[in-house]
Image 1 (cartoon, one colour):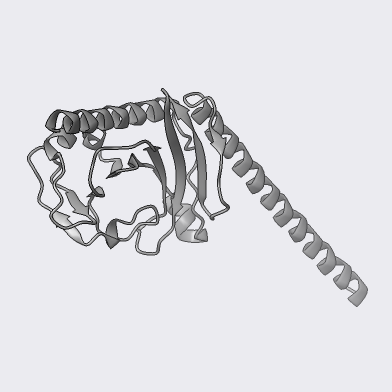
Image 2 (tube, rainbow, N blue to C red; image 1 turned 30 degrees about the horizontal axis):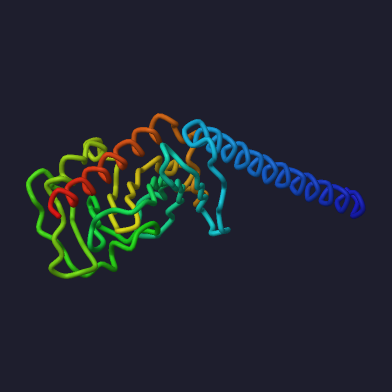
Length: 229
């Protein structure tokens, strides 16, 4: 084989590889866009006026809108912290309306490592648990000596019975549940270090369920405060 033929063959191989990688990148972008469109459709099935207000943070998509007359926020977060065995995709569902609590109340399930979606690790004061809270839950607050209506809160923890709800956050400005949507595909992450989550989509029924639970919790806390006043 002549040097010219060898050079032409090498050039053809390089071109073929470049075209293949470009096709893979385009297919990946198309999948991302299709997944985002599917998520938006699922969210707007419950929150008709949901708007994408993402700020460009890598791995985080944020929607805001209204549900049953209340301001709400939904956020998907891809957590790739090295302390996790596998990357995770979380769904954060919030009602951003006033709540009658004097400080931050944060319940985290199995808080074994830092997270990208919560300030739980920065809360310095651990609370004793009243009856009715999950055994694996840890309660913290940002203000020592603060009392919360734990009996009321414990009556609204049904989403935490399945093992996928990770955090319940209650602040004077709103309530939030963080839910595990999916963990990355083990084989692909182990070989390529890519956080791929398959065909996981946001189920409108899940959104409705979590918002309903949060709304009932917020109403119960506010009603308890009015009765105590």
